Image (cartoon, rainbow, N blue to C red; front, side, top):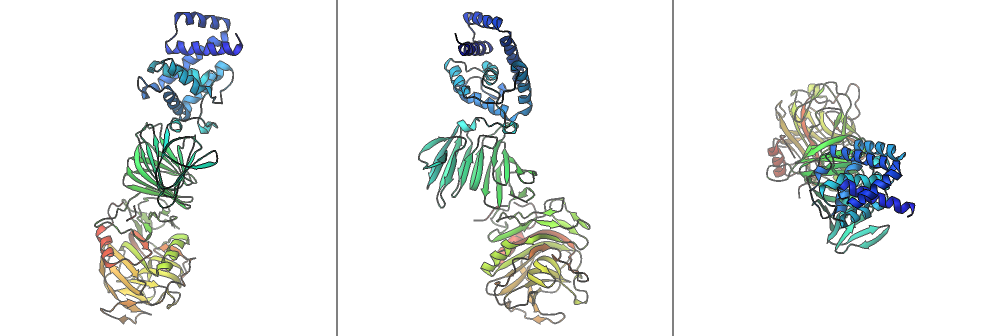
Amino acid sequence: MSRDAVRAEFERLMADHLAGQLSSDDGVRLRALLEACPERAAELAGLQEVECMLRNFSLVERFPAESDDATLLMTQIQERLSVDRDLLGKIDARLSRVTGKRRTTVRPPLRSRAVEMRGRGLVGRSWLPTAIAAALLVGVGVLVSRQFGLIGPRMSDSAIVASRLAGRVDWVRNGRAQPLAGDVRVEAGDRLATAGGDGAARLRYADGTTLELGAATGVRLTGGQAIVFIERGRVVASVARRPADDPFVLETPHAAVQVLGTLFTVEVDAGATRIEMQRGVVRITNKATRETADLRAGYHAVVGARTVVAATPRLQAGPDRRVTSGLLVLYTFREGRGPFVHDVSGVGEPLDLTIRSMAGLRWLPGGGIVVRQPASISSGKPAVKITEACRRSNEFSAEVWVAPADTVQGSINYQWIVRLLTVSRDAGNRNFTLGQWGGDYRGRVRTTETCPNGTPDLYSRHGCATTDLTHVVYTREASGRVRMFVNGVDCSAGRRTYEPVREEVPGTPVVIPGTFANWDERYALTLCNEWQREEGLPRGWLGRMYLAAVYGRALSPEEVARNYRAGVGPMSVSRSP
């Protein structure tokens, strides 16, 4: 008998012995082989030690007592080993003592050995840990995770079925694309791409997990811990419940999402990844910054290359829910700490803000920030998505929920308007500004018919600015009409060029003619001050701010009233239809 044949017989006899299936004749043969080669006896002892390791880790308790698919069970155990570094390290160390070298390869015989065991009826619970140990350690090798530098087969890779639901769906394998027709079993390395418009597909896993691919979506199956890499588009994932130490993982260019069983949506574009939770919980990791956040039902997060991960409640459209149509940026101040305020609008690349100095600022529990001394909370970069959207529509809406510290700031000697929300460069150059002047709220907007500073001002009725919690919305329509809403009511009083002269126009619509063709896309968005402050010309606002938002259109009076009724309590962030 050749050396390879002797080795193969020894492996068969050892697997039978560990599984409790060794006949008396085979027992005699195994003893003879062990006596002829002491190294084989040491190997068998090592495998029995590994069996104890596996049992101590309760590996076998995760599987049913009987199964019709030994191959699936074997690959499931491999998957557990691929993510359990501690167990792998111990097994690999034991292997090095048994064989004199570490096994760092995964060889094809694993599946055929599993099929052979299945054919011989070895599918009971008792054989699993030891048979797997034998298959992994005797001539097959230890399967390690990607962190160990190895890619091996995974349970999900062998049990994924792709189905076309609508439109055109392309299935790519080994660089060769073909239309997906019917149900097709897919594997690591395959790619699916749905056509724009009506393309749709589904990935179905053996445990009941499904991924629904929307139109213009591309995904790639991987052989590592990330089961699916989402290149672009929209994916709705419904993931079956999984053990805490064995999460389902999705990756995008910006984020990694670990799932233990949930329903959620992932949308990917060039600038960011948006995750919206309907049920369960996921852990999100920003791949650029390595920051993490846990996302629960009713919450959403936006992750970009330079975005700090933050879980934010969703804004759900509906009666007395906030309007989201036309929304460009939204700040809810729920971070609770740190120097960043996150744009949670879910629109385009997030326009996050940075607090230059926390001196005199304090986060409020549940959402909000207190500004006790002049500060600057700014994007520090051009607010391009605001400028471009408003240029197209010649409209905008600027919205805040605030409680001013007093009703005299900005009005002393008629010197200045303190800034609540502004897209501008400095005290004399802006696209638009919403601010406070004593007991009034003021608005400025630059058009082709105004100066670069955006004057004349729109002002509210005197006394509208109080120290109470107040909802303020400044809108400009394409027709040129501007309005100032306070607590859901149109409080526009007129416009002026320079104080103390006022152009009183009671009951008459206030119009600022022109277009936004001269808006400067280099201007940043800033809260509570100007972006570039000038000595002797302070524009800092003081008080409490709970929400700030900008829309690329003019909200109607009914929509303003709806946002007012929605308040600033616990909120949700989705897009309205």
